Image 1 (tube, rainbow, N blue to C red):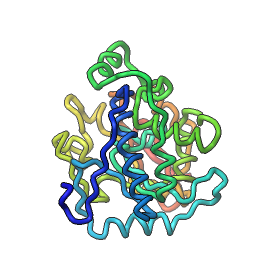
Image 2 (tube, rainbow, N blue to C red):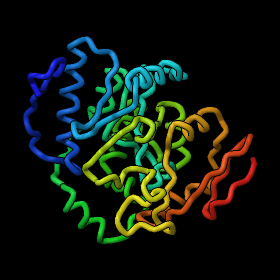
Image 3 (cartoon, one colour):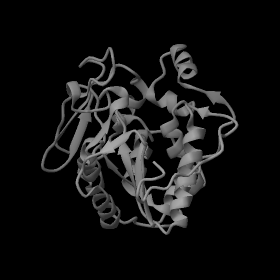
Length: 277
């Protein structure tokens, strides 16, 4: 790999602890790569995993154009541009601050700030994490409040360091911040291919039944993509306080929501019904 044209390999020392789901490893190598890219004069960075592939034509131009066309409304929080975040699966519109850590894109200083998550002082690998999750049925909200997701911890840490306080864990606050500071795109919109989980993260597979044991009653999810983010940004998709129940009640089951957008506003409810607002 070192012999490839325009490829620079950055080596890092192992952190003393792996952290939550190996987040310390990810933060260490990502920040090292970002700082090297900045030293090389790069202004905008696309962070991803080495086992990801992207097939969208003109991908980098597309991501750059997004951050230029949708500027921040203010820069009081030391963020220069929006960060293009990847959509997660499993009900990501109602899973507060759960944005993908596999890839994102932004201005190099913003990206360094985002990924400069403080090192966790413990070791909690996937097996240990699963044992904790077996002890009770955690809702999305409880998982995030109890710091049980690496994805949400990265987002919340970034916001806490740039806002000066940790955001409230709610769908309302989540949507507000996603609207103001991020742009969200799905894996499919970037032509992503990730063989590791045998396409379980492909939203087109089995209509969202993305994990073993999923069914239309508990596994059909509603996730961010650019069109849903754009509807939120334009004011067509409006928060309703009834949406909080999805974060409070849903965990790995009881997820069956639907959205239908009419000419004006969108409403979502647990029966899959929608109405004009």
